[in-house]
Image (cartoon, rainbow, N blue to C red; front, side, top):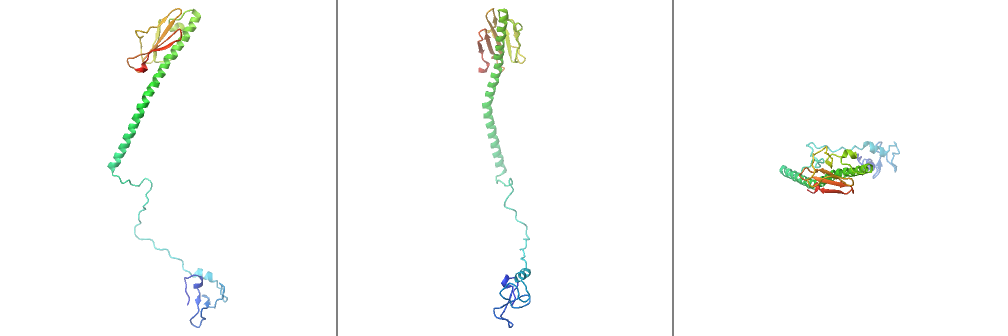
Length: 229
């Protein structure tokens, strides 16, 4: 018999029927008895090529005819949370409330520090200008042997915008805010050997004035501190 579709040595015809030798193998192409080699000694058929040519190709299984099942893996961001809409809204509202509370705490900490820094910056304007007035008075004294009673005499020009400056004979009002008047207990003075100049401002627009003075000894004093109120 001859069996097709099987590996190499099963693609032969085996003896045992019709006068053929028992246990002998015969060429499937010409029927001649095979030897020990892989090629037929009669027709030269290569059994390996013969098997490769006559072995049927495997048939792939048929595709399913029903609808395809959806993939259990969802794209990133499409997985449902399983929470009802009201729960999602409650969670988002809680998160928003928490963020607002944190921002409020940060603002409560930062705003006073910022206002304090702003106040110190404005006070530096008074200190700087009074220092310049002292320098101008000393220079004027060196030329005239007395201190000047006006800013025009000592040739001083204001550098700033928030304070009024006073000498006995002249007042210079600020460009921003004011006008300001001298407090009742603080008065500038000038003599041959002494002087005192005054700066008056209002840092936070309340009823308390910020008042600074400087004298001929270059003693700078904050006689009324508006940042403490």
